[in-house]
Amino acid sequence: MFTSNIKLKSQRGQIRKTIVVYVILALTMIVINYVYGIFGHGVSSPAMTWMFLYPLLGGALLFLLIDRLTPGITQYTGYRVFVNDYHSGIATLTLGQFLKGILDIAGTSSPYIVFFYGTGWSFIGVGLILLLRLIAKHRRN
Image (cartoon, rainbow, N blue to C red):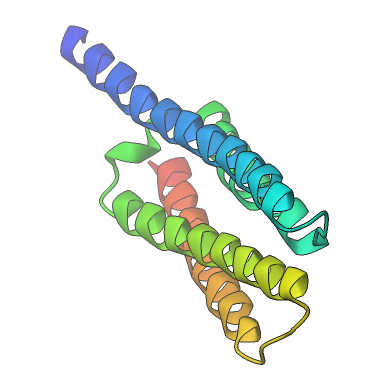
């Protein structure tokens, strides 16, 4: 029993580290927007202003809910696949927002930004499906 308690604390610590990293990333996105605004001659972009929401809400909030609702889910085999897929989706969406913001500030556009959104949401969708399968497996056991 003692060793299982240590493993559970270690697993919860892993999720908490993920939450902290996502909060730091959200704060970094806010700082990047501020610094870019200074050098952007006073021009701003809504895409760049709100890009911090992907890591904050999509990352930190989701993993906080996972930590609270399904403790011990990190021990399942498919958890790492879910995490890698989901992180890739959040990173792709955040980068797409950043590039869209740069292009908006520059006064131009690109037809390729749509691919960032499609790819990012696809990664997140697959990740959430994997998460739901893991939770269902967790509930059955």
